[in-house]
Length: 237
Image 1 (cartoon, rainbow, N blue to C red):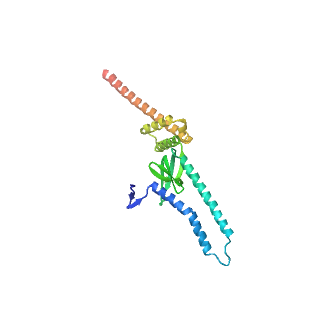
Image 2: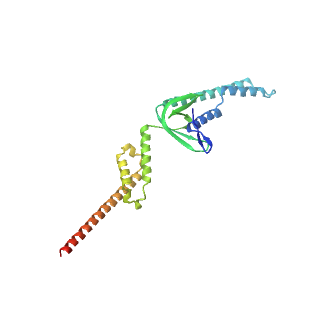
Image 3: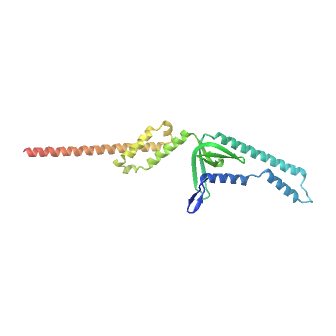
């Protein structure tokens, strides 16, 4: 039993439900089947001008044209079903837009494909989605590298401006640098040269801050030693 989400007293359809509804609506709005064509043909024959009746040849021509169109639609549906079958086991991104324009992105493995009325529906994370909402088919390694780079960039953008960098940002800068150093060459391709250059500036600036902090600590120790030595000399005198 499906449980609908409620927000503000209104039922909010899931991304799967939105996708299925759009897939069904698209088919019903765009497809004219043989029965509908025959009904139109009978209506045309019934209401034709008796003084200028349509010839049998024209009717046959119209039916032949429709038969060709029907064959093309069937071929297109067959190609879609074949394409959907090849997606089983693949990592995909589904992008569903609801009636309010809000977009939901669903990522996951295609477990199986359901065929209904010449339409293909992909099962992802236990829910069905229309093939019409398929956005991306990608290798899992690509998506993992992309996600890792996105998280790295998010952490990078949290750093303060270089001019205001302080010693208290030491852990963040070092963690960012360590993550980048441990990336594979493939993962590093997702980080642009501008960010790599920016990281180097942060690392260099942090090294300067650390050195300054160490020197400041050494100076304090020296001062303490000097004062103690002076006291000893004064006491001895």
